[in-house]
Length: 349
Ligand SMILES: Cc1ncc(COP(=O)(O)O)c(C=O)c1O
Image (cartoon, rainbow, N blue to C red; front, top):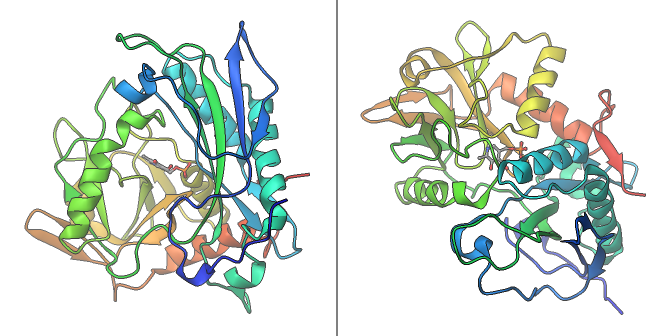
């Protein structure tokens, strides 16, 4: 019988902690099985798997929030289900059906919900001020059976893990720096949420942190001129004329669900949003705010951006007006503090 646990929410980082239940489903004999919950957090894997040897694996990330009413809701899991299916198709695996995905993430959230893994609403909001960043993070991922040769994954599995998380960026510096490392290039896998894309961002982020920055910003691989995204988040700029600019999607940028939501919220607030190419030189000359978006990152602002020997400072370094407005809207919807006017939140029951 599982015991309720008490999490120290104030000190919780973005790490894996063992929750009680996870889900597993196998693709066998031409179809996905119904999936089931498992209590063990170790899985037995075949030593030949292409996921192990070549990073031929993809994953998702979404969160469950405790809302003002006290219930638990998922933010846009239908979008994660679609992106997961498209990532799997991009890796030439049998896609996991959207309905199974939705059932799996709901079931894992439901079965862990009474055990103290989900923060209370009060940890996140006080007198309508957003304080938190705590949630249950769900990580669906694929695995595959043996194929030590350079071949496609076959007989894939899907596992859905839940963990309680705190804020993604470490407290301290809010400064960002460009990196000349290459995350993704034309005709590559940058648009897929696959393992293979994350080794370089980990190295770039660690290097940025070692030099006192919060985040590394990737430029395009070919000219090292156009801004693309952060290590695991999309990027936005508020220009001096008030326009909100974000790099247009393409082969090299992950289509973030937070990005899509933030664009909608900005339009709702009558902010002029433009998705286009933007050079780092233009950012240095004309941006007055910048922030990144993601399930993990939420909406996190930068105090400055450094590129080679130039730095642009954004105001006093505190969150700017546009980022604050969008953050309050987004978190308000996610935690049920304001009306979910776009029907983004899903019940788990
Ligand atoms: C490379 C990359 N870009 C952007 C994002 C943001 O995507 P989302 O808003 O769907 O979390 C992520 C987050 O998972 C990411 O890994």
